[in-house]
Length: 85
Image 1: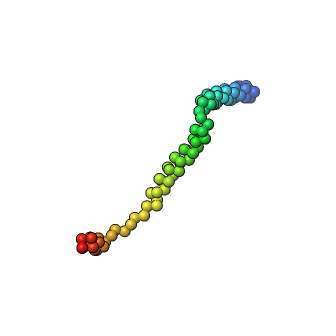
Image 2: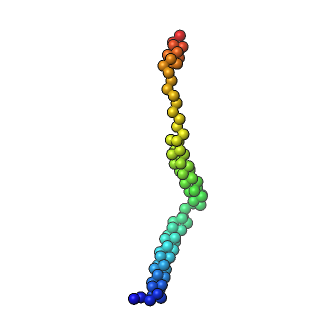
Image 3: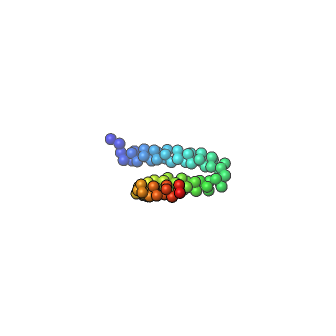
């Protein structure tokens, strides 16, 4: 049976490996973002909010559709006769 100190040491090495991998990923991302225009980086949240707004607003339009009552044939006939007079 392993002692608790050996188990804790093993967990610390796993955490250290995870932190090292995360720092390597961050460095690679920062190198790529370093070559990108700051203006484009500032516009990125704006584009994300536009996309979010459009997706939310299109899903809400379905709930706001109101069914209009059908027109009676009398009004259609009177309008048609008024046009042909």
